[in-house]
Image (cartoon, rainbow, N blue to C red):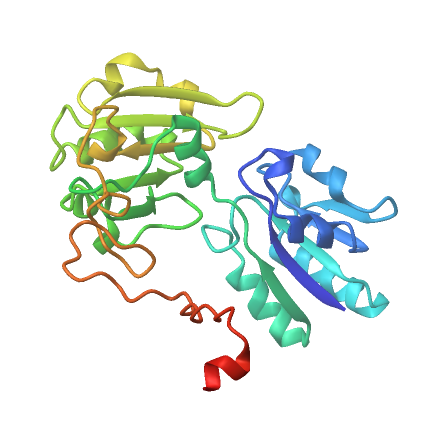
Amino acid sequence: MKVYFIGAGPGAADLITLRGARLLGSCGMVLYAGSLVPTDMLQHCSEGAEILDTAELSLDQQEDCYRRAQAANIDVARLHSGDPAIYGATAEQMRRLEALGIEYEIVPGVSSFTAAAAALGSELTRPAISQSIILTRVSGRASAVPELESIARFAEHQATMCIFLSGQRLKYTVADLLLHYPPDTPVALVRRASWPDQSIHRSTLGTLLEQVKQKDWLLTTLLLVGAALSREGGVESSLYAAGFTHIFRDGSDRKTPRPSKRKPELPAQSEQDPEQQAS
């Protein structure tokens, strides 16, 4: 048997990958995080699969499910929201599977931060503005953030920042960001990106707290901040500029034309009789 850690994506049932949906439909047991993964995602499961919501299960109880599947030789799909590599609490599960001698595979998924960027119609990296994205979160009871990775320290870079689970400490998070970002820096709150009840609020860092009620943004909220979120025009990338030369295209800045890759044409054969050509 085998366990597949499958990224369910941000919420919409059709944002799971083709591989993830195929594997979800082939497994006899499905464990999913019911507090984060919508039940619409379960439409990809096979009709006879045993489906278990892990929201109320401890890690020990989940391990019991893996043991039971191992004894029955049943493949397991472990469905996680977004991508399993980001705040997925998968590492501790993998360690237990290794101890049990159970093989596992990770199937990546669409992260909520890219879904949020899509909902905003924003590119998070823009030339001469920001070429880096910082993915972080605020400290919580389940897992504290190391001091070296505090919001205030990351803010020194003024890069595009995507802050997960930010709703419950919004006031303190904004205060930390204002230590380094200018008050007019664009920000956006995105709650439940790609879900039917998705919510978006755009603002600036200095005015955000005046415009929203924190109680409306407590759960599954992502805070995005950075100059790259601005709607105003900026410097265009050179990649598609007419003058820019790269390995696939000659631009007007190339001094010497690139040798043609086409095969040389053979000289046209004379219409004279071969004996006349030889004479």
